[in-house]
Length: 386
Image 1: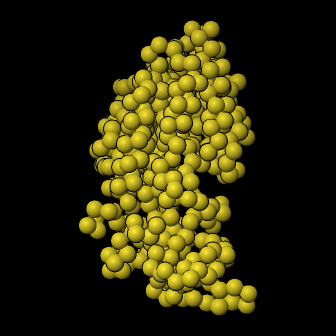
Image 2 (image 1 turned 180 degrees about the vertical axis):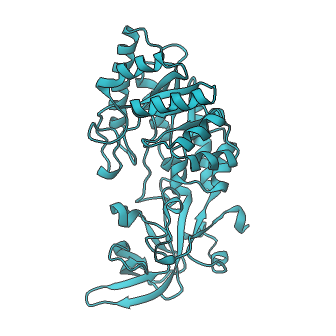
Image 3 (image 1 turned 90 degrees about the horizontal axis):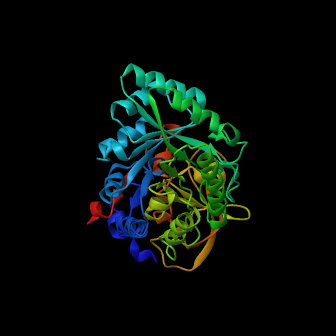
């Protein structure tokens, strides 16, 4: 479905660049709003790490979402885009003092704390400022997610979160500290999860903990289940909006919330992946011994996911309707891993053709680098090209 791209306008732009179809983004956000309106006390914080483009952030904020940040820079980006501090959560296993102070100065909703040393530092810094910091404890639930090993986060072997066996001790410590207030529990088991059974396993673990804390008369105000919902990289046109209905239904039906408990979510990839494409131009078509190469002006500096963990992105020649041929699609970077796809079927490729790497709205532009002294890719939205 190449007609979704304004190819004629693309020809006037310097490649490579990111193109964001904000119509898809708004449709996605509308579905999220409709599904969460069916639930009581549901709060959605967009995971800024997926894409911090200011136009994207402002659109997401317009739909009432909060922000999930993992660095001081992301907090600044969220504030610049107009997110309310009382909807910002700050996660991350290694928060620097200046980042904690920034969050304290803006009175964010809460810190998702991952260790006892971090809790003690937040308490010390909050004391200096004469304030009290809301904290939720990120629990490592030791739940396996069926996804790539590099993007699982909820196993005991991962660096994230507080071990299940230590959580009671940490909560008792928080209650003794004067400048932190315990407000809830936080979980996150991984990314690009398509099996709802993984989320069901997390719900079972959450229920076990809620029962445990209830026996110890510990009140849990907020339950944050993180994000992790995946997208269909194989068929971005067929399923441009992930299955949010089943995702939210799973948590809402399986977690046995007590009266007044809020349920928080932190989707990132599922919000923005399908609205974004990396648009590149063919520099050369090179005939090899046993294959032919389509050499693009975009490389792993612009979209690192295929090189980093062999991620798949659907690749389309959006300026050709000629018969299909097979190519290895590669970039210009001086690294053998600078490959977007091998044995890719594309409409016959010629120098100057425009190539779209689809489903690149998440972990694309935000992970770009200037290796080889290359410029960072620019970005455009649907509105920019009207």
